[in-house]
Length: 635
Image (cartoon, rainbow, N blue to C red; front, side, top):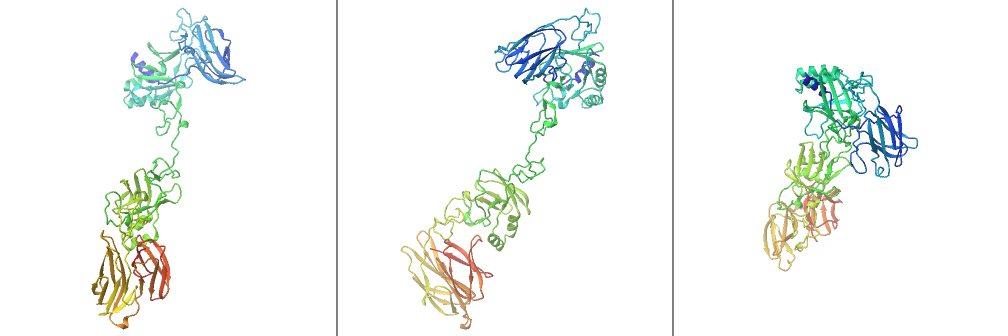
């Protein structure tokens, strides 16, 4: 029976830390001591056991320390421990708290703040015994010689029981949490602590449900659960100094305060008054979760970032908005630089990408906090569509992205949400078998395919360092340098300028039979259609350049009207002559990445266009609606 009653008592208790009997109202005290700048007044006071002393702070920040000397650190060894927390005083006086002294003897105390004690803020209380009548062994002031229990004291005020006591079974504690009092797995029970009467537990429906829950969880046997509730309804308790005593029938349990809780070691239960625990947040999802504190949901602090977009770098599944989303968070490159996509994998670079063939698709944001998007220039989209990459163009124009560290997240309306990892230069795109790379990943070099020092792996659109073989002029024996028209079987002579020293020239054509004699060649035209006679000049290192004259071969003189359009010379330097046999039309020049770099209006007849603003290299040029021709700019 003793064990069962002890178990019941243990279930009522729970772990914590305590501040001793601090009161917020000094009314009703039998004696008052004033505290101020390095003084307690009176510094010595004699009272009778059972009387209450209050302290009032008239100025400064002071406490009442009856535990250990603030001067030498040695314990005061007072008959019973007492202390009051620090309070900031005012001239009107602020109540620091009160304490009822029941144990006779001499009590020393000081102010432990700063060097106040060393400056003289020390004092003494002498508690004289009084004649009491208490013959109840459970009481704090039990006197075996007394003839009645009219003066019995069951709560000496060492602990404040007004907020109840936490009861926590040791078997329910989380071993990963560094405290022995975890209110979240316990229950807070109320106490009846009436003067002159033993302390009792308030057994209500909540406590009954808790005990039944312990039984259901296997922490109590069904029999012990019944006995626990029965004992708690009838048990009497006393709180005397640091000692808790419980009596139920003939069974007694005693436990000493260990500084933070009473432990019923044999039964595995901890208990502590709620006033000994700090208040804290009970929500594990909160930033300041504290499982060792009195639960107070108002103290919980949560991540204030709102980002429910899974594409974002700071995605939070618990948030409800997107106002704080971050879509670019990396040190690999910046949003200020241009980014490039490759769709034609013609050249493999051992360290990097073949930038000469890449298309510019800059990453950017419409506004701060929005997902990244591509800018697909109309000329690039037009070229992609021309080469059959309509799906890629659609995907790029509709995709949203984020770059988070070394990961690129790609939300495609076609392929869904995918991701790729930085490979040292860019992000591979498995959907199209290509890559996305920033400008800073490309080395400087020459990206012009016709240059002598062409480097396929260099930065796109870099031509400043390019070097070339400059081919001489090409003309017919009649001095024509542009387009010529001949009939099937005609013979036409072409003359190329002498090559530079050490260079050689080669001729080729598909217009008929070409007989070559050094820098002169004679064409015997065959068939019909448009073709070219070209001469290529190259140096010993294999670098070469070419110039051509367009030839239209017709079947009779009657057909010898000008072709729909021709351009000359080709290559051109700063002036381009375009012959157009039709109504006014727009003439466009595109670079090999599909960007429109020059535009003009053609009138019927010969048109002289200024192309001096174009960088050396290859272009596609032609009137709107016609098949473009390759144009070389060379200087």
